[in-house]
Image (cartoon, rainbow, N blue to C red; front, side, top):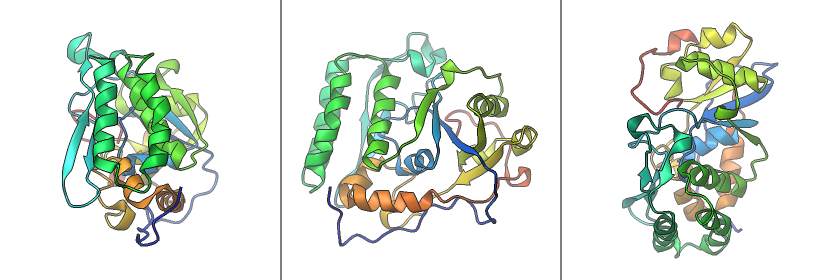
Length: 276
């Protein structure tokens, strides 16, 4: 797929400004399956060797687990794309147990909204081809998390990610936010946990350090390719700038350094949406 010669390369994501740390080992990111995730989320996952799909915590209706915010190719107009989701156990429903209310309708809506917003992009034809397997998944699964995980892998694949995926529901982990994250990292043999800015506000780095796991934070700029990275689906950047330029930008961001220390973390409990 071609890249846009007129686009300005954004600054790489910043994984802190401290000196590099050696011996970091396998890098792990832990994140809920999101529908066509934001570019900031995609950058974090891209920088990881392993994505632990956090599928055994509560589904949050007001998070990005079943919806994405899309930006128009030109102008500041944005639009939400949501997949109506049924929660069999009410608010206590785990992400893995959430079901699409109407898979066929959701399939039509996803394809229709994306086509409406991005068909004028020169990168649309190839992206439309890449959508085909995702659209086909709606015909065989009504699990929201399966669809949203596949949408994330679609975007990662377009950028050339070669990591692997495991599910938290297949691993053994204790209760409590930080303990759970530590246990998941240990279960896959990770030497480094990669978190977003949200996660750095509540995790306890000392508990990672106690078992020899480092913690690194990913933050992204706000200009160039990164414009809207923390609010808009990465689809916006891909269809505006092309996967070549976006991939180049994200690959630069994957050179992370520095450590999250206890003194830099606010250990307040967030209401939802963890990890960051």
